[in-house]
Amino acid sequence: MEKAAQRKTLIGVIGASDADRAAAREAHALGREAALRGYALVCGGLGGVMEAACRGAREASAGALVVGVLPGYRKEEANPYVDLVITTGMGHARNCIVASSADAVVAVGGGSGTLSEIAFAWMLGKPIVVIEGLGGVSSGMAGGTLDRRRGDRIQGAPDAARALDLVEKLLNGR
Image 1 (cartoon, helix red, strand yellow):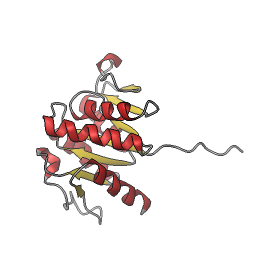
Image 2 (tube, rainbow, N blue to C red):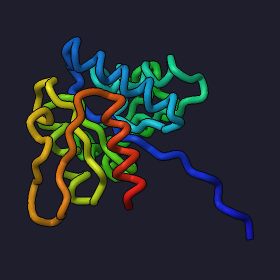
Image 3 (cartoon, rainbow, N blue to C red):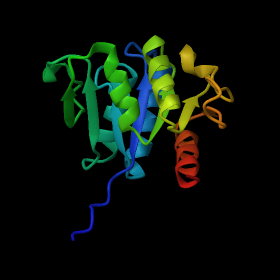
Image 4 (cartoon, rainbow, N blue to C red):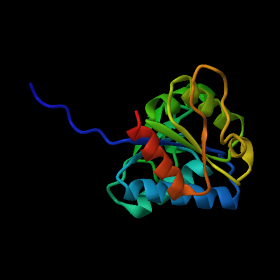
């Protein structure tokens, strides 16, 4: 029997589609750092935080894998840095696919859509790291929980590099 291929760790990058300059800058750094560390990215595939992270990954490595899970049916809606476009026609329900596909989730600011992805990741037992100080729904979640179904807490990091350091620690501790 053939040995299974070594799968890349898939980092979910979540945040606002209308990100401000600070959030976009941090998302770009997150995508770049993730690609340099050999991770693949999965996100909602549209603009804002998603596009900035995808662009960061692409600029860091031509071999980076960037997956975009779109809410609609039109592949051309994906930002230009997405390699693998998954159309769902599910609207916001696609957030569950992003969270369930990721090995860990890093949130950069965000609103109610980001909150739903955090909630799905929480229910699915995925490590969650939020980048602090950027505003949005995720910014104040570090150290907190959503309910009693898990014994751990949402982790906070001051920047992209430390967020990925935490992700590595959390994934290696499993």
